[in-house]
Image (tube, rainbow, N blue to C red; front, side, top):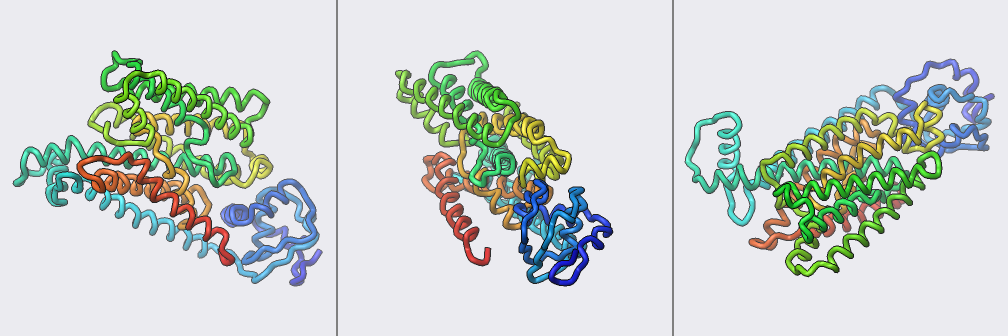
Length: 430
């Protein structure tokens, strides 16, 4: 069997398989991959910038018979060689290094700026003195308290929240095959909101003191996640459609519950506090167990999800592809749901519902380093941390001494950015 370029398809099947080539090809041409894994026999495929060797490698990688493809048309043939893969890896490392520098700058700037400004030199000196015993220089006790006790825990919580939201958003977009998915798709934020409203308005778990609000919110998030799990599994195997529908249903029910709690309360101040919390804020950050637990959960979740990146790549293309590559979609979704629910629950319990971060930033990360989750998730975490720290600085300074809810800032920045991304996705040369 010969292609239009005179290449013997059957003969090239003897070539060795390079999994990285096959993996990249699958991510770049999901429609071709779905057809192969469903054992279809299409009359023709136009694969720009891919040569026959790549196609054969992918078929061999999936253990599919090349004879099922009667004709392959290759436009602008160009081989995908190891040096190109190395270039992609170098590009990802370069972007990660650049964003890491930006994150450090944003952290220092986030500590320096506010209603009372502190110079970057003083910020670094105070942190060095506290962490490494650097001899104290000329700064006041008020400046040290502002840097160490007020702003540093707030900035660290913002970085953890931003990283967690973005990574969970990227995973959910792959898990449900929907580019508009975000961390709040599964109703977890609605559960946390209901728990927070109960704590603020009616003193639920009041005996826990300062931990009453985050623990009530986390308990609400856990109840929501359990409800989504039970509902999505009630009809058999957990699919992306069932997961989305279960999340939307649970989310509406718990949003109505929050509204009922606010409506039935006689405290105007409590209602305002609930509304402020629902729009997101990092004002509760301090050196306590909550900061340590949230940061730990986010870091562990990012590491686990990054280790599962190859399975995520297969799942993002389709369930048939995942099955072909040895990934059980239903069971893998259950594992992803557990990790994402834990991470989102912890994040929302500590900061409220901050929108647009987990929706927009994953698309930016994909534009920079491609769709491979192994390269994309670490960069997305860094981008999310940088973005939310910068957004918090804007929320604290733009209307000083009053503070805007950070969700307003992220929405004002994220919505136009999402529009730009949509226009670029649909551009002729995209």
